[in-house]
Image (cartoon, rainbow, N blue to C red; front, side, top):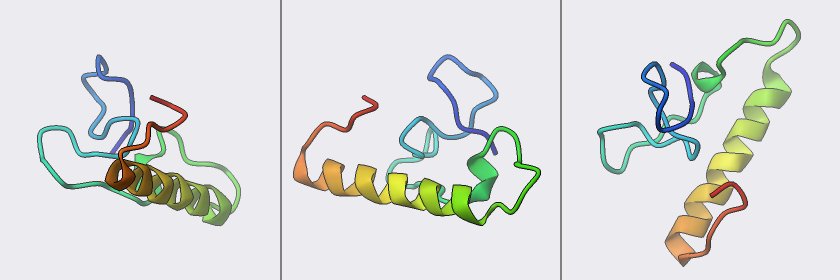
Length: 68
């Protein structure tokens, strides 16, 4: 899986980790990283989860996020 811009045909999820073409579904795990880190993936995956939580919270409150 890969995240990316709306024009990226290879991307499965958008910048907010929403699965393209499936309403109400997000992917929040290491599979959204376009390249896997050579070190321990724990910290990057925690940050992906934090970003997703922030996006979900903002969407429920109707508040815009920093990245669009």
